[in-house]
View 1: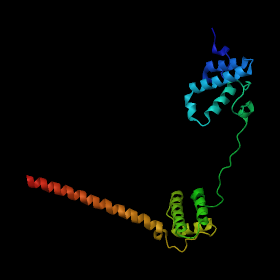
View 2 (view 1 turned 135 degrees about the vertical axis):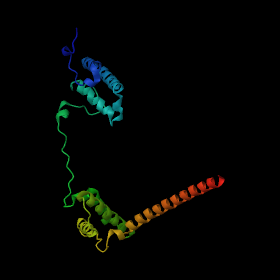
View 3 (view 1 turned 45 degrees about the vertical axis):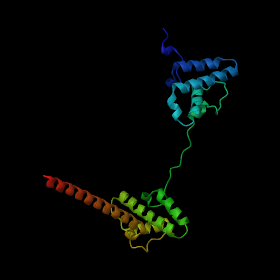
Length: 218
């Protein structure tokens, strides 16, 4: 009886023994053109056996890499991609730099700093003023979430001025409640509440009229 322990070790068990045997047979072919044809056929077969790989980016490249792994990196064929070597599997990836914020107000996040740079680059005008007020409002929200406490607007104005190296200044504004953004938001909210109240009153009137009509018919 043929036991698995006596067979060649499966280098990638997810592909099964049939594909492993095909790769081993491909290695024994003397003619390189035949090896190329069989290697291409094996890769196509591997893709059919594992259709989920097609959802991944560059799945064809991965299949060819898997082919060389199955061949224990000892297969002389022409690959359409750079040939994967054994050293490539043990090489550590380049260490990625972790983004850091060089200020004491890390709770505002990097996006706020990017918005501040964007606002500084804008020309003076309504667009710049609106963006500065949006930044200040978002800074206030971030501060309250991180510190779990209410913050005065003058603190936000001071932080904004410091983070922008004194190029964005809202200290002349009494509070964010008087900014254009606040008024626009609250005007919309008030309009929505007014519309909801008016709709509710209309519904109530229709119900009362219907009930009165029913009572008269009785």
